[in-house]
Length: 161
Image (cartoon, rainbow, N blue to C red; front, side, top):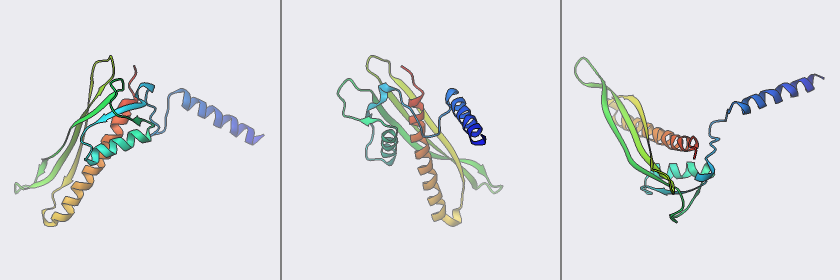
C-alpha cells in the first residue's frame, strides 16, 4: 500500500514538472527547422569546435550549404581586459575580462536574426606570479567559451517559427 502511494506521488510530481515546461539543463530541444544546419565561421578556432560539438550533442546534423538549409554564422568573437579596480599606489589590482561573440541565423524565406552573447569575469593582477596569472586568464577564457557555446544552443532552442 505504501509503495503504491509513493508511486502515485512520484507520478504526480513528474507530470506536474513536465506540464510546467521544466527541462533538465542540457536537454535543449531545438525546433524541427533547425535539426539540419550549415555552420559558418572560422573552423580553425577552439570556439567554433565547441559550438559545433554542442550542436551535434543537441541532435543537429551539420551539412554543407545547399541553399535550402538554415545557416548559423559565428562572427565577431573577441576578448579583452579592462581595469576593474586599482591599488592606492595606482597599480591595477583587478581586471575585468570580457568575452563576446555575435551569431546570425539565416532561415530560408525569413529575415536574418542577429544575436549577441557576452560574458564578464574578473581576476586579480598577480604580477609577482605572472605564469599563474596567465594560466588563470586562459582558464577563464576557456570557461567563457564553453558557456557561450551553451548559450548559443539555448538561444536557438527558444526560437519559434
